[in-house]
Length: 305
Ligand code: FAD
Image (cartoon, rainbow, N blue to C red):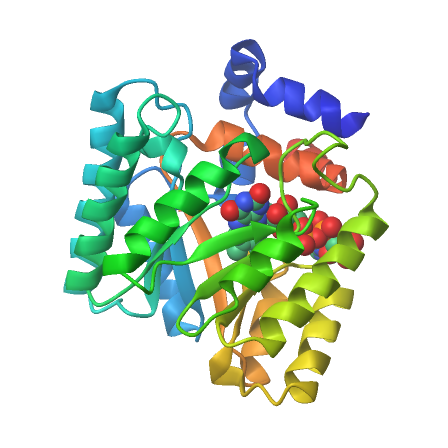
């Protein structure tokens, strides 16, 4: 119920204006988002990389409705990749890209062309691109574009969402040599016809998918903050004899930073997903919808000022 309310609020421009102007907003946003500018993204990346973490950067923006907007998003990624390389932050830092931000909703070919330009820039910067996965109506299109991109840029990463009923089968298809696959639970509100609804079913699906990826030939990227799933992943790494350099953990910026450091201390690669940009509102509201307990963080920030 609370999740539905927050997701509805994430689409309301009135609530957005209220949140954006509230006095506590700056501190809350700062915890989950590196900042608005490319410089902020670079600063956060430098700090994390110096602390032993790998990074994937996401330029926030999902409501692309014109080719001009899509081109501007592409250009921001090209600038970012150039700056990361210049600063010596690649290959430790790569980028995560949402095809919707590149025009997928109104022109698939344009989204593909833009993604291709980003992959070329990433290759020149000696790093990689991962295509974020959005709601289930885009899964086929995203996987098709991924397959095309991989012909020339085989290191392009996929994201699969354990809550979708189809994902075990997608994991089997993608657990092949050279294939980078991020496995997450899934962040969108999806109908029962396509997605498991209970947390227990989603967790069980995550473990089945993890088994497929960890026993396969690809490079699993296990994106979760869930202590039980992290423990299972560590167990499977031992079981399937998968050395720490043959998979990685991924977590979001500002979430469980001590656990991120603990895993690095134990010899694992941990990649922090760092969002930056002006369009932080939708991103932040989804984080709250995933875990309404994060609202307590809002409340604390509010009362401490
Ligand atoms: P949850 O079910 O949210 O939490 C499980 C347990 O983890 C909790 O009970 C708690 O013990 C612990 N925990 C969780 N959050 C916290 C916290 N803030 N503090 C302390 N403990 C906590 N989704 C997509 O749909 N598409 C994507 O492309 C995508 N990319 C992602 C990339 C990365 C790197 C990550 C980490 C997530 C991504 N997601 C994506 C979001 C993902 O699908 C989940 O919505 C999100 O990660 C929450 O699920 P969880 O596995 O962390 O576990």
